[in-house]
Amino acid sequence: MKQGSAGSFYLIGIGLMLALSGAVFTWLLGASFGRARDMDHWKESPCLILESEMRERKIGPEVPTDYSFGLLYGYEFDDEPYSSEHFDLRGNAWVKDATRIQALINNYPAGTQQTCWVNPDNPEQAVLKKETKAPGYSIWFPILFFVGGLGIVVKAIWNLLRAKATANKGEQFG
Image 1: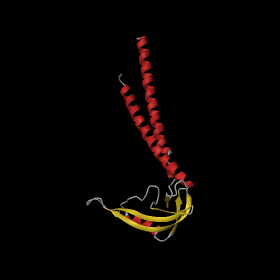
Image 2 (image 1 turned 90 degrees about the vertical axis):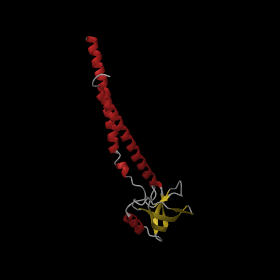
Image 3 (image 1 turned 30 degrees about the horizontal axis):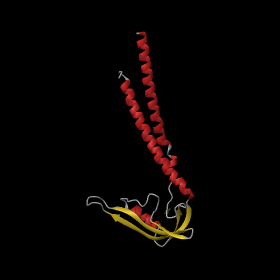
Image 4 (image 1 turned 90 degrees about the horizontal axis):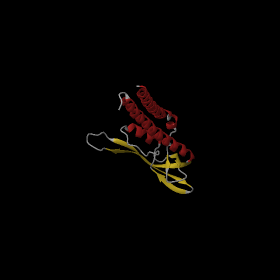
């Protein structure tokens, strides 16, 4: 390895890591945006909240209590009855802040009529809250890492090739 080429190999490694990170996060944001866009085709349906409660779990004596939104609602789709426990596509997350769960219970009390969205391709899948398209608006950021990482790789390879050509030219005339 010629003196000075180690830096180029280091830059190639850094560039590849940046490009890979950018590609992974671009894919994740794109997939999330795609799920939200697909939900635009879901059908709105009235639903009845059957259960709305706070669930608690404690996984260890030194660990704070976790809380989750215990939910059950019924709805009809194509004249067939269904039920769901899902607030959104991710399910009902466990959180440390009980006030967040209490706010959901207050917004969706048992016995109230609400609106849910039903997947027409799979009517057993329904949610009370649709996914946001916000990931699609911020997808440009990881794309910068991908493009920048590739730019670093290309520039480092260019420098290696230029250094090799210069060295070969020097050997021919030396």
